[in-house]
Length: 193
Image (tube, rainbow, N blue to C red; front, side):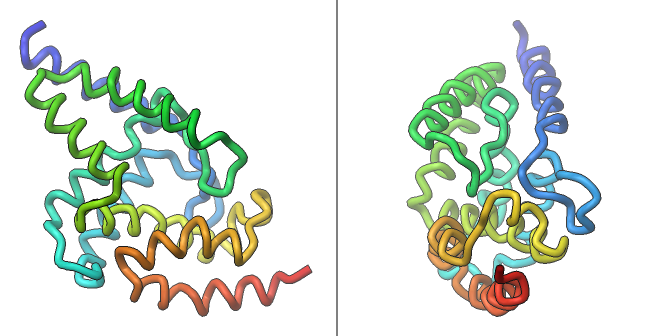
């Protein structure tokens, strides 16, 4: 397959991300967002919020990671952070998806894209740590803006939110978690059973 045909094959496959529904709704609560919308939105979040990264980041690399990070959901689906799934099995499925999807590209691009995806998943570099933080901030905002969104459906508690989200956001953008925390506390106080 020639280079352009391989690139078109990858791009056509990437279009399928628009059909993967996430566990988070749009801010207005009208429907669930799809993974392509989420990817766009967190790239915008990163562009706006990069100044709040705990360490300086290369915004171009962060945006590229966020652009690519959910492509594996074409095969693996979205497994919400508060959902009930086996993380080890999900990791296995996502790695297979990454092999297949990035493997559609010419070898040089496949290697480069897969390396960025792996870096994001490992969350060890400053860029990846910030990207992971932003990936966690956007759904919290969507849930807050939509009156709790899917939190009740997933039985989200303040402790779950702190453990599964807050710890990751604080690692890369503690100021953003601090800004969200009072809104989160207020929402849970207002919706206590």
